[in-house]
Length: 88
Image (cartoon, rainbow, N blue to C red; front, side):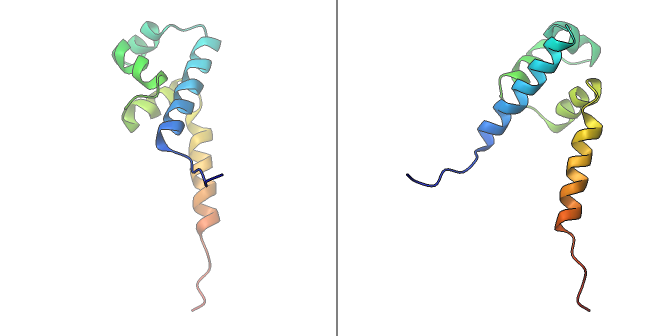
């Protein structure tokens, strides 16, 4: 079996699924979310479908659903894990 690596496409699909699940849990339609965030319905649809979106859109959605702090903490944890003390 050849080595299979994670593809960007797969991550985009996973992000879209997360957004869709959270949106539905909050009982918000794509149209309502788009209006709340001053985005188009097509932008929300594309995000949920794993299609190209920009980082600002993703961060707006994360902030709206209180996921931004957790996402940022994950980034900070990864930064900290990569840090090492200089030998000099």
